[in-house]
Amino acid sequence: MGLTKVTTKLTALEKPNQNYEAVFLVDTEATDSLVPTDELEKIGVRKEGKMSYELANGDVKEYPYGLVRIEFMGETTAGRVIFGAAGVEPILGVTALESVGIMVDPTTKTLKRLPAVPLK
Image (cartoon, rainbow, N blue to C red):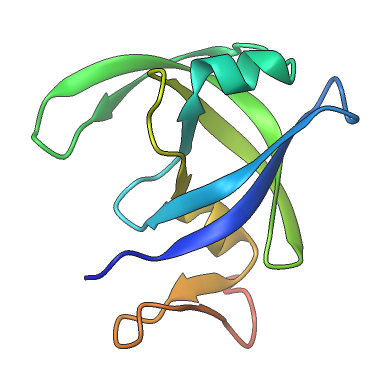
């Protein structure tokens, strides 16, 4: 699959006037979103806990995560964001996409809205 990217804005829940906006790589294999730690700390995102994640190469690594408001394509949701290494490309995970009814069209590699969010 080719690369799909989308401009995304994250806002700290405790500091709604602080946000981070960037072009995120859409990764349908990633459950949660990921942003460099320094960017999350700048906007006041608090570490809520740690979780083990399986990387693309099969390694398992533990990362801290926080909770943020996530906005893209005129939609808003909230969810978990991983505190990533400095300089890492921001990733928008599938949980954020699915929660607002958006999917990646495998043919065109573009994001498209579902007619309705599945509730079954």
